[in-house]
Image (cartoon, rainbow, N blue to C red; front, side):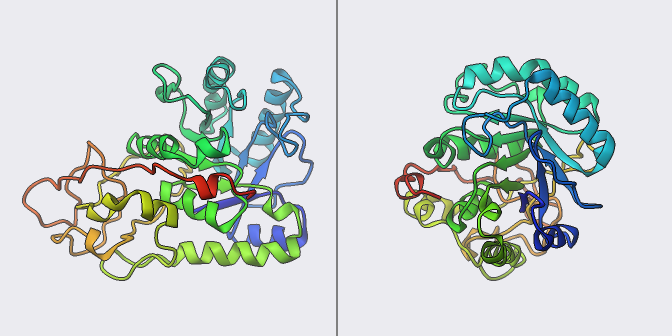
Length: 313
């Protein structure tokens, strides 16, 4: 998973240039994106103050986005977030719809902000965006609905991003949901201390073994283990194997078996097309020697994130 930060100091810029981090840019952020670094474009509707004080207005935002993509290139852009209404699913749909197609016309993936209540019928325009951005309240974003929507987005071949990730525990949850990227203000405060810690967390995530042995260094977040024991009964990973419309598709996290017993017994080698989340569209991986389609076990979402959702991180 890629963590996106602002290039606010030489050490952070060096980590970005080394490929350890991506860059998050906004209309209010004046820092230059380091050469060759992958970047994403937020819209400042929520902003660092949580009140959208730096939102410049729709037309000014799109003019900034157009200049940014022209300057740094569409091939380096992970996604651009359409205007939204924080914590308001209906308002977000109204604000985003006129802009999603225009973002795609710039040659970059369009991101849509998922808010509390967006799982109601008609509030997620799946065909109109490329990346699901998990926004909304902390409790909602870390809860079972957001997890289910993240899985559905991956099954549809879309990227998933989680915002406001400022702790190891929340990074673990984002990874567990299958997020491709995450961002937060963690590096803005005490970067000399926090950058080494963040890189260590990311190293732990990147230390996943092959499907044939070991377990993830993190394992499942504690709250997930308590709430989702059925996750241990996953029969086999599903396949995504979709071709992105974008020349620089979001990096899909490497397949990983969180539990030794979750590996399909007939899976003998790691498959590049195999992803962690089973879905209704699951088909037999290229490396699975079972003569029939692998049948995914019923999935169980988290039912309680109380300890994490109320934490200040």
